[in-house]
Amino acid sequence: MIKFSPYITIYDLEQDFNGLTEVIWTFSKNLKGISTQNQRFNIHIVSREADQRMWLEGSIKSVWKYFDQSKLNSNSDEENRRAFLELIADSFLLAADDLKWDKLAIERAYAQSLNDGIAFCYSSKPQLNKSKTAKSSLKLKLKENKVQLFVVFTMPDKNVEHEILLIETFQYHIDGLKTFKDPQWLSDDEFGFSFEMGITLSASIESLSAKWNHHNSKMELGFIKSVTYVTFNSENERIEWING
Image (cartoon, rainbow, N blue to C red; front, top):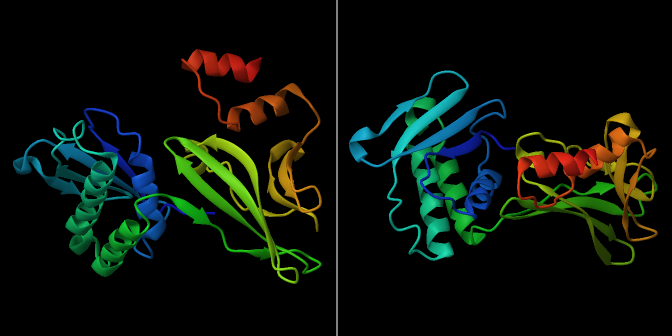
């Protein structure tokens, strides 16, 4: 699965921008070899250049960077995505010398993100099943805070590819909680994830569909609900739905 190295967070936004996570994930996907998953990179927005500073000790690296938020409402979505991408890249470059990070890697991540249209899509490395009749990979797409996970089956001898929606889940189950990790062949026919309590979520080559395997316990059903994307009006409403 995708690794966020380091894990990037932007603070002190005066208003929400729905595409922000997609900008962060796109840059993270394209950033190679400068950090570890155990590090966090926090960008704190400040309203004056005079307030810019850095704190780079320990595993949490923090940069206070000037960013003009006054145009966010009037800018197009594309303009805002580019502005946040520049903020992230500039913040990394600001800290690069002190942290001995490869500036070319940062600049390449910025350039590739532009080539991607600052739109996130990720595919894992294909895995061959035991009988060597099919390959499978996981594809992730992000829209605001909803992540779609697809299983992509490829049958090389038939030159056929099938894309199956596995689940729609919340963004924090991918980058924060890492609930979905290590996709694998569960049998010669099924590819997906294995969780605690013996629960599995997989897509099948034979049926070309996805399914949960569980024992129908309240705890299992609560887990399945908790990772399935649904919108709520409040946190209490979400908890009631999970426990219902």
